[in-house]
Length: 141
Image (cartoon, rainbow, N blue to C red; front, top):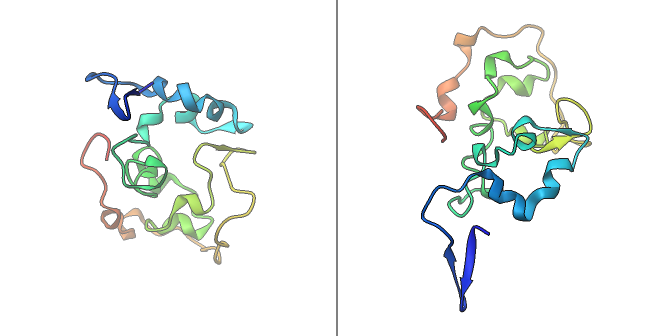
């Protein structure tokens, strides 16, 4: 366990770094929950996205979407369709399931929002406001 009970108080079990494998003690079912698993989940790299016991974000995420997603997913390499991919302030989790899905792309069965009209051309990377999502300068956010 990453925490132990001493009387009615919970204390950390160690003052050393604990890797993602500790998450499997309680969340092992996440590894096989979907037919297609997201790479970090399949590789048991939970701490790439989650910061257990240190986060104020939902699901103990280290940051919010899309900021957490662009650590690995380069915005300029995403398909311009749907147009939501061009808006770096949109929440990726409105359409995608973070841990996995039924098919590649990890799309939700029913997106929480409906895609808007499709763009005819992709804007040049210089026209996108990448700074608007406050990317980390290095390492995890």
